[in-house]
Image (cartoon, rainbow, N blue to C red):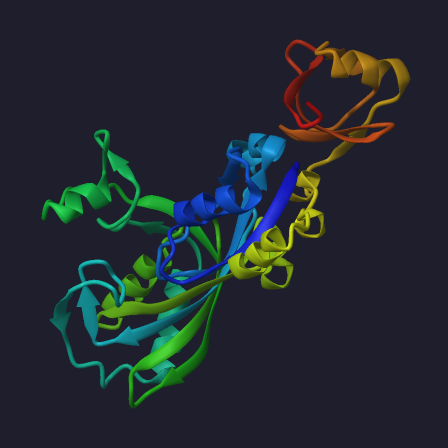
Length: 298
């Protein structure tokens, strides 16, 4: 098998738990995933199967969309409801109008300090390993982009609500909520998280682990759930090779950019032959050749 199975990750599972489960269901070891989700999160987790795992580290930066529950008036050591409450403050002044107004400062390009309970490495050590030892270290703020941020629901009496967030990779939604809470002067924690879109796939494209297990128990194959790996590269410019060009490219030969007559300015392109998708390539304009990036046919 080669392709992508979009799994609706259940709550309580790590992304690695999902991979381990699917290795048993699919009876294969060569699996990878895109965009790690915390255990409390649910939603779209693209799992790359077989040769498709070659794509995991070159994925385009597709927007990710989340639906996040939050509660104001408290902060925790994990910035979500799974952690230990470290402070409580009066959130009564944070009405719907003030919460909506606070969101304006968190749209667009912003800086975020990664939370201590995260997989970010500092001096070769994972932050969550340090956090579990009670150690807190300085972290550098990193740029992220919030493409859209909307208040979908807010209960002024309970000080709880729901945000929808479209953002770049590397964005921590619980940190976003923590920072919004601090801007309101009362703190805030994330209470739920559903990723509704990732790598161009939505919840409608997803299958549950239980559904996959039923297919395995019935000794049926999983072709109906496999999506072509080329779908994650749909936003890249396309180059079509013919005849001798395709044969040379498939044999690892760098093609002369002038001969294939491409004026594509992108850093990476998707390459097709007469038989369909081959893989991705990088135009090396300094040397005038088309360099093979990743081939998925072998």
